Length: 617
Image (cartoon, rainbow, N blue to C red):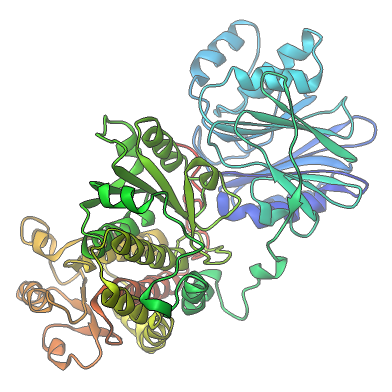
């Protein structure tokens, strides 16, 4: 979840490092730092707690000179955000410097041994032991690249590491162990770079590779050399870097998050493009093949969606799509908890990971365990070059475009689109969905971009006023039934992620079994109540809230005038087919959370304590 960026070449490194870290700041932003080596072997380190601007000001006031360097944006695990805990970290000699993404699971054991050998530590981080391990190996006469490989091999857990030595000019050594966040090596014009994500390389590198787990690279300004952790050579081909640097422009919006909410009709269209057709009554899904033959699809006994956070909520919707359209028992589970129990899986189980970044450690490890246990695997992700696409039999790409806001918006919608289409295809293969059913599903989903656009336009008229009226709320409750229950949970997630107001999402039926005790005049209740088969039941739940002096904000279908008798405020959405309601109803919840957070003066794009890509367990 931390961001790593490095450079070696003919230009001054500091400005390039700062620009690269800016592009990676969504991965972590509680502190940042960089280290630069000059032509005389002098190492300069600058670190600052807080947002990246603090580091930028520090470098302006205390410049660093050199044409080789590494930088880091941090999401804290060991030790709070502080100058001393910020990366990079150095060894006892002050010559070895390291940045790191991951958690050293045997940190205490290694630190105790190093301390007994006379090493002194300045920070509370697990990362600081890595340069000290390298220092010991260098003292034994090993070359830097071999010392880094051996040191990395002593770490338990999943890691991405970049190391530099003041006495080894024009050389960066990087290593990847397990399913930590990716590390890419990019080639520019007479210069080489490293980064946690390929898009960060876009302004500088025309081609790049992503390291595989267990792979290391020695990077010099004229090229790089790959080896496995055991020293065996590794050879792969550079590929073009494909994300435009212009994708990061806000386009006139105040925040990336608001821009990305408004991009959802277009991103949904991208998810549909090339995947649907009306010919012969079949839904064409050529770009998202399922890892099953028709016979295997018919033999399926279970589908499990795995994810964390927003991805779990999307998976809950996907599970209901699979049961409705393909008639297979399906569920959605927290990947971290699924991983640490003994799940019953076999070849008749399809396990689908959901991860916008493709680097979520819990989900990747759970998918790995699922494959070991004999299940079939697929993943829904937004990043085609991510680790997730290589960890399963088939990737199903969201095609949501670059998403910078840490709180997921368009990737939530696009993951549901992919699940809908996959459920339709599975239903077709299992003959649970006939030709007419396929045509109906295809015709309905083609309306989604227009419906999303209408929902956003309708909500934007009132969302800020509604948010302002409830700005002093102590907490929010979000209620939904059926397909709206996971959307209520997601609405609560967005509210607490961005506004920092406590919020809980649940089934409206669950409310009266305990949470109703929280209802009072200071607790707004958001009822996700579009017109469907559970609409009348939602009205009853809203009435129960009003009877206890609660304030109700309803998400309702345009034309449902009777709902105004049950709600204090209404955010309207267009009428749409029931299976599309989750995708349409999530937009007003995103806007309500955004307007609340913005009115409170919060940094909506980079909420405190969060990171876009969570690459540690």
